[in-house]
Image 1 (cartoon, rainbow, N blue to C red):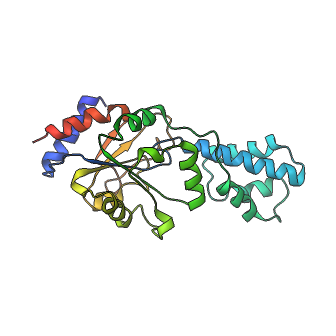
Image 2: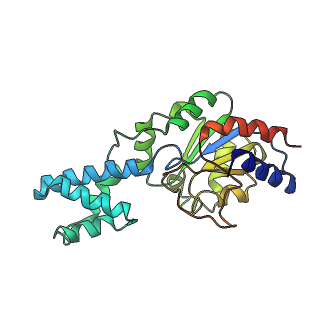
Image 3: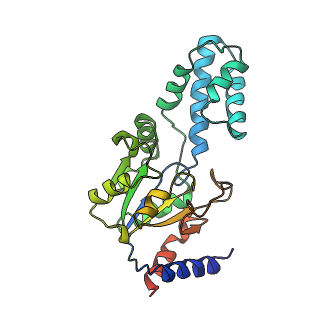
Length: 250
């Protein structure tokens, strides 16, 4: 779909729903939206592989290969259980591997180029906020490794405050908007995964945009009427133009 056609659909949506938005605040998701989440997984698997080698003298390349190949096949949550079974250590403590993965410092993760450019150029033009979900130390390490605190007026790790169902909840968005003194009708929210990112924001009346980069972490995830974003882009580079066009919709 061309950019022109996409904007036509957005304009149609805004008029049909009588949305009159003047964007002052932009809230971002973190994983998969601002950087490739699979790079964090790769970093974590290398940390686990190093530990397994030190403890059991099993090749780091072998362990990493098993973990990363299973990850690419779509295996989640049980990665380390599967690994231990494959290398004959199923009686070992899987919790130790999970802890290493979650607490390691991901030195080599970097922002997507379009995300870096947008944050650098717009952190003074809009109030920027970040909402992310996951274990506190894991998300804190990611934020630190990416060096992004300087761009945001507020960063909110939802699970740190007990909002474990933040993708459907309005609590995290309410908290963040109050902190940066903004309103839902002045805000857009940008995420990448329709399964978890947009429902809470949509309940609040926040305009939602899905970043769908080719070969992105969630590119192939299909959305339905309940969880799809209001609009879709393939790069954050075009976001400023889209916002200007939104402001001109009457």
